[in-house]
Image (cartoon, rainbow, N blue to C red; front, side, top):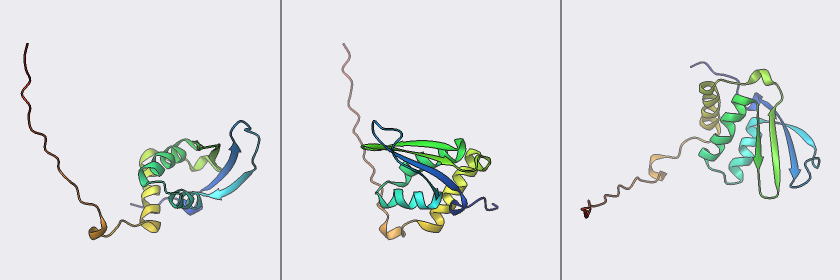
Length: 123
């Protein structure tokens, strides 16, 4: 599959505000890959970040509600918005470049839990 725009080429307008004062905080320009690194460094899981990034890339903006503030992320160039499959590809390419999968030995193993069938008493 041909490469799309990379995460380090997508510029975002970021506005951070304190709760109760939406006018507080300055708007800054960052690249998507820097915001993704910040989220990974803060302890967010891939699935959580996926749930934020895909709507951002498709709709062009997203709001993150955090403990005592919120962040509004908006793509600087709205013409860079993607269809869902392309948004997923951009995120997957970022993951392959910056967060490759763990080696097989380090991955957790799946555990199968079998529940015995319990007869249902009929009245």
